[in-house]
Length: 402
Ligand code: PLP
Image 1 (cartoon, helix red, strand yellow):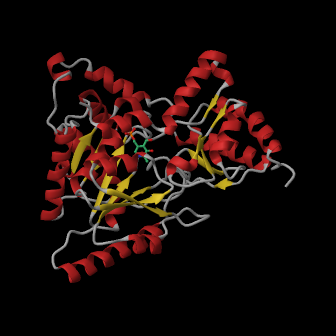
Image 2 (cartoon, protein in one colour):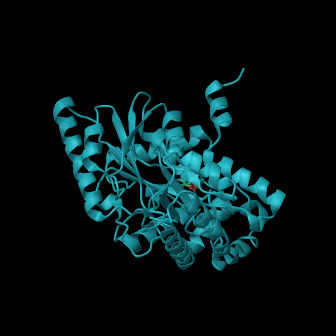
Image 3 (cartoon, helix red, strand yellow):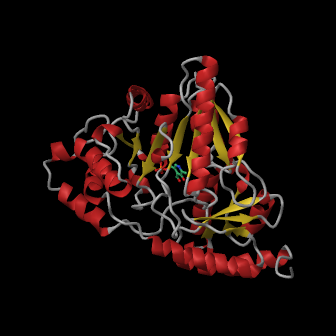
């Protein structure tokens, strides 16, 4: 016997990972320096030295302590360190009980979804969106409802979200700084969303008596990677917010699988949600995030990200692509450039780009057509060496003459 749903998930694979595997094959065939892989959000910036120092300190612990299980929600000191860091930055008063340590943002969002969405309910995503959201939403038994972002700005189209809300809406997921567009949602945009959700909650209460509020899941693995834009603290704008975070991008630790879920314990309802997050982690087998990296977070929670390296890459890529005639969304954060595909069929463009060993991701799996995601978290030399290929493609598509 086999679970066909799980089989299908395994067999379909992610387009991003398929391109990443193809890039690795090509690198083995023709040399690493000849392949321009812009697929995966795998930071090329090294983890800070403080992470290594912390690991070395941990290695001096007795092995049974070093390698032992931690409590299911994480080490109390790690949870408190995260809460203290948030309090310093956002003027909040969180405690360890508000934080559940997880196995990266994938687990954070999965646990949050399983905690608050019931089979038959709906979860709204803003398209384009991180493709795994659909997988996690559907695995929780809910329906993924795509709401297109505002054209041109790619901010949240609040009127469209409002129109998509039904009595079955359990949650809205937002992700700012955004993967894949690089847009940071401005405060006014988030305030408008919060007001729309409050209004919907009030309507529900009026029409249905006591009703569950719509939860806002704010997935924030790129919070620290911005180029000057303010990233508002979402729970201060909307009470029913769950923040999902990971250190995969900010501390360049994607393979170590460490992050957290924040559910501010402001009400009996919120305490029940945190209990459900713990239950989801239990059911999904995510209890006890990696102990070594929980300790690293205690030591490195406030380590800054090396945003400068990404800023240099962004500037080099943007100025070259502009010169070649490409159009794109000016990125305010994360490390992705959202480029209009010169071919309305982005998959066809990516096929043609492959002949130059150039590997962006077509937008189709992000829920929209006609765009490309270019992950510029690569080494600067990769961007530099890729420019002739971008230029030749621009010539082929007649961008340069415009
Ligand atoms: N959410 C978004 C928006 C992401 O871009 C990613 C990874 O790229 C994740 C979640 C998953 O992060 P993690 O690797 O920490 O599980």
